[in-house]
Length: 251
Image 1 (cartoon, rainbow, N blue to C red):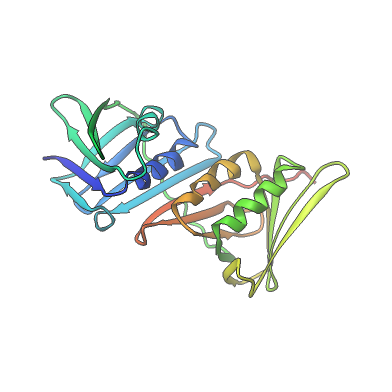
Image 2 (cartoon, rainbow, N blue to C red; image 1 turned 45 degrees about the horizontal axis):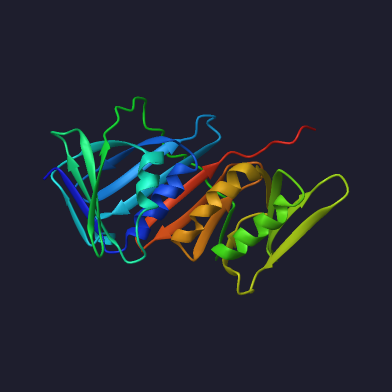
């Protein structure tokens, strides 16, 4: 068996697929003996996602070697929307048939076959950036702050001082400032070497924050006018990480 993996809760896989699907329509999932991962950049090269799922977070995981599984995220997403609340999920690679079998097991067992896609292009490298700010916070607090920002603008400024984080957005005559103070229940950790602020497009951030459903917490890392890194944990050891380029304001 070149590749087989099982989650007792199909919703976990659905959330991972949704997280990748907000940036790209197709992606290569790379399965190895110890890890299933996917790294992809959106067509405009503004944002990137890096998913790392160690074998230990699956209920069962088998992989005989390194295999590349090219998939349509739209097709996989449609299948996963058919998953019931208590369904188990099993993924089985059928290289001979050129497909991935998706088994959803509940009161019945349903088997979906998705064709493997030949997706070209190099895997994007992981950015190597030293950040001045790293903040761990409740995912829902960030979700709500971005929803507030969307009322007034298509971009948002995130800033950090020793007192905490500020998320602000403004239109021509209106705006909002969300304070997430150090020591509050929403801000779990704040480590920083200098005050920082940067502006990011809400169109991307609002999609990315949908991945908040995989984790109760999110870690933000950024520096002044540098890319933003958002990291969500999946079942403890797994990670869904986004990178988003800043919006540089003209002088």
